[in-house]
Length: 570
Image (cartoon, rainbow, N blue to C red; front, side, top):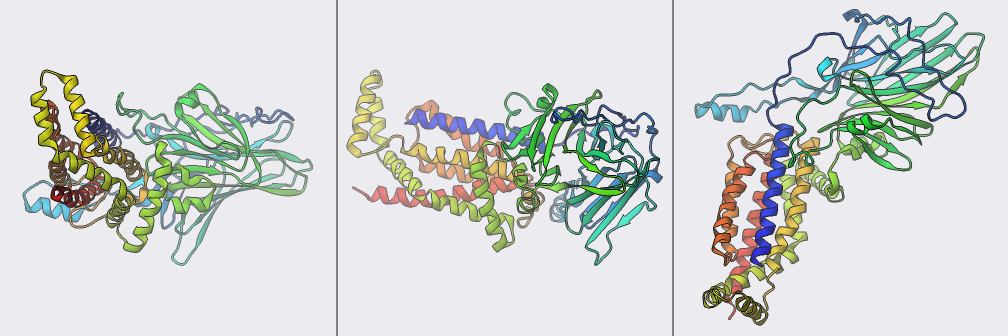
């Protein structure tokens, strides 16, 4: 029993270490990247979707972009848009959305409570970068943009792609007080009477942008073409972690949702290995990262084709194009798509598109993570504090596993009671290990002690602990969420390391209630675990440490009571 418990605790310690390393990679200090002001490299045909693989009827020609000016666009060709939650730019060259800032999500939170406390005790106060998170970025080093356009079918006039220059009479759009929506129109007309009006509609309090591309055919011939929408991203040059941590980090890459296969990850490595070409009804394509997601969502009632490709300059593209639509002479039609660019708030995403909430990636523990998230939300709605929600979830988990914990603590209490007799057997049969094992098992049987019973709490805590790690690391609601006093961000470490120290103390108290290993070497190693865990937890998010402190405290109360009851038994 001692060996099994020791192995379990060592395994758990290794998991804690791996999670701690992964957290540091994702949220620890990162080197500054020098801003690059060179113009973004422009691809002509290479970055357009090839709509030939999914249609066996006709071969779709890519638009002729040879005449498209490729000069760097001036500020006059940039439209700025601002709502209550978004600030972004629309490049008249193709209507590309770039430099999108999430106004209510600062990069770092200014913690006035901590700053005052640090100043009082003579510590320096670090400056915070309170600028909003930039999701789309035109910086070449961090390039990430949302592109859209039309592709004319073979034999028909060309159509405006994301390389085509549109026109607009206004350069600035602001959502005014009392205004619920805002529409930005772009227009393009060719020499044959084809007019395309590209409309971006923004709504108050929403991260969902509606794209309409209206086709008005005033020519004497019909026009046929498709709509495409895609996300283009520069490769991630940051460290992906070592052997221990590389697989523990939250997912950062492409995902798609199809009618048949549902949610699928399409990593950047997958894109490099093979171009995606999938046909489905409805669905969506996206690029996701910690806390935030960007997704193109075509109409759910039409057939869509999803694709990926890697450009010659190393940029990744993931997107969707529609089935061809024919617009007769002197007639019109429209294409529609939605762009989501914002925080991964699950209840909000569920209303936008089926399966979009799955971009909140809880790894292989999703089946545990989603109920925990739901419970956290319910308690938060009642209490209004995510720290209290964590405490409430901890209480619920303890109640759920109360029978199991009670049985385990009884087993450990009995083990603790017979510990002197086990020690005596060890000394008597020090030179006869097989005889000692036989006598020890006989003692367990006589006293009705389950030697594996004390291991069950550890087995239960491992998946719950890992799941809470993913929930806290992926749930954007915890980002910068305050608890109380100096804990003003549950997603970052305790600035004064108070909670980790309390956790170490509670772990030491709980350890004193357990029977000590008979092996003296194991006993010495076990005494070091509270110190080792405290060091690990110094850099863990305060929310996770709060869970562990409450869990340990409840376990101490429960185990102390059971131990006293067993000690009174004859």
